[in-house]
Structures are given as C-alpha cells and as structure tokens.
Image (cartoon, rainbow, N blue to C red; front, side, top):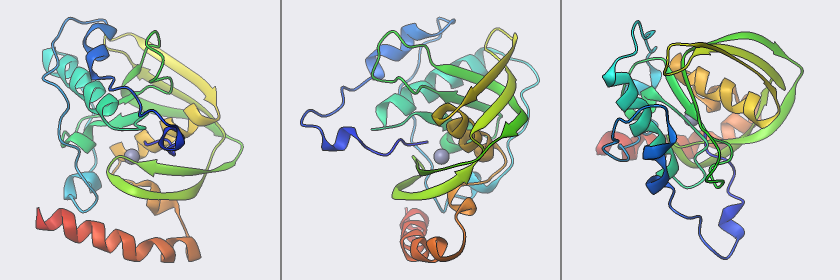
Length: 203
Ligand code: ZN
C-alpha cells in the first residue's frame, strides 16, 4: 500500500531506503534490489496466490527483494508478492519506513482471524499509481501468519496497520482497493483506471 504522500509536501524528498534493507532481517540473503512493480491491468494482480508450504532460500530472498522494492517506492508501506509477479502468500509491511531502527513485518500465509469496527480513510497502491480513494475497512484486525523462521506470529492491531494488513491480504486473493470503492466514487475513478490499464497493456 502507498501512504498518501505527506512527504510530497515537504521540502526534502524522502531518503532512499534501499541501502538499509539487506541488514534488517533475520537472514543473510542478499537482495538483488528492487523488482519491477506489476501495474493495474497486469493479470497477475487478479490471480489468487498460493500458500507457501516450506520457507526456503527462495522465500527468504523474495522477502528481501520485496522489502527493497517497497523501500524504493516513494510512500510504500506495504507490498504483496503478486505485485512483483509472484503468486505466493507473502506480504511485507513497514509503517515506520523513515525510521532506520524500525523492523519491517514479513508475514507468510497471513490469515485474518478477526476484524472489528469501521474506518474510512484514503488509500493508495503501488500497483495503481497516482490514484487514491476513500476505502471503508475494519478498524481493528487480528492476523496470524508465519515469520521467516517458520514461527507462528499473531498481529493484533488497529488503525493504519490494520488497514495495510487488510489491503495486502486482499492482494493475495486478487482483490484491489479500488474494488472496495463503490457507487459514485468508483465512477469517478473509472476513466483514470481505464487509462492506466491501457498503458500497462501497451508495455
Ligand atoms: Zn496495493
């Protein structure tokens, strides 16, 4: 997910964070660097990702590459594997991307255990550049998953992190935030989306 760009209005551009990611995680796998992000119109974004049965070097490296990709994108706070063309159930999130000491979340086979409350906020997506819209989601979420050590983790949260979790888990089922925009607001987006899709298909 892309956070609505507060940094856009500040004088100094956000520091590139790619240099930070290789040391962050539990593993020593080197990232090959940011991967190309699949854009709206690419059919891979509409497919269902498959559960990861075993966490191998391939998944460790994928997590690294996804973090590098997310940090390289301005305002990127979350990324799901289908967004880099990989149909596996893996998501990465870092809400504090500008804080060098923060530890990103890497969640494998995330499963929503509980959703509660309601909140309406602007959302964007790295696969749908320059489009934001208000999306109604649960305000609280409990998600269980595996981490890169194959340990079960449970994330119980609210607010922005709950929103990003829901956004990224949607990606694993081929669902995009614009699917959750209804009625008039969806009509407003339609033209922009068609243009974006045509651009993607032309590439
Ligand atoms: Zn997204």
